[in-house]
Image 1 (cartoon, rainbow, N blue to C red):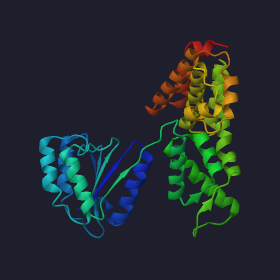
Image 2: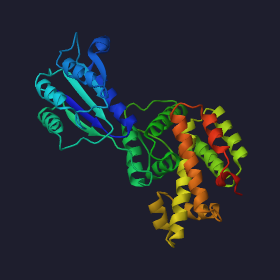
Image 3: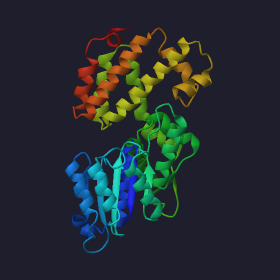
Image 4: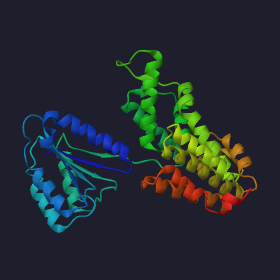
Length: 342
């Protein structure tokens, strides 16, 4: 009765882990018969999952029942908990139950204790957590990059990893995409595959592919800070036309804006230690503090907060499905202190 408890807010990493289990367990020829995905928000589907997981797979390979937004470790009805207690003893050895939720399992629940006990007693079962580091957790972001590098069989030196962190931040999906692109480009340049060992990605290649685009977005942030909204929109439109992902642009803009806010706040509190300011604000290179101080000179905290507010609204709008350029226009062209201040 293998059970996999997979949780955390790093959806990209969770999905990679889930996909790996599916590919390992299921015979592709029998996937349509042996794979079920259940919506845990629907009580009826949860009961269906517990019925299906008791069935042995058809044909060769194993069966997988995946419950997205699983309620079993984060609060479920007494009836569902009782059904789980009955079903967990009847799961065949070649049927795998995957319970996925963004929230941490509640250790106080009887169902959580039951599932964890089952995981401990079965060598094929496991609990995996995938949490995104906070924007100011530089060490956590470095660890995230290293984890993805390991998954892709790539390696980088510490300076290159810091460059990835500084350019992308804690966007797991984007880091994974960019590292895959870098791997393919590196292979094309050397004209050979490196199947027997890890492929090393150079700092120069990262600068060429990632930092150049990031720099363009930083220029846009500078335009917004100066109130040059039309110029900023033209640059944004140009990047979008050239295939730059909208969320990557907004990630760079919010990262820059967040840095401005932190430095302004810490400076206003009388903190003069550049290294400490860099550490608290999540800026990997302390020398950037001097540049940021010049950028925000004469800008009020209210102006910086207004810019951050607009950028977060743009991000939410893009993620909800609005056309990216419309999201930027709708929010940046509205009158506000940050857009009218020079």
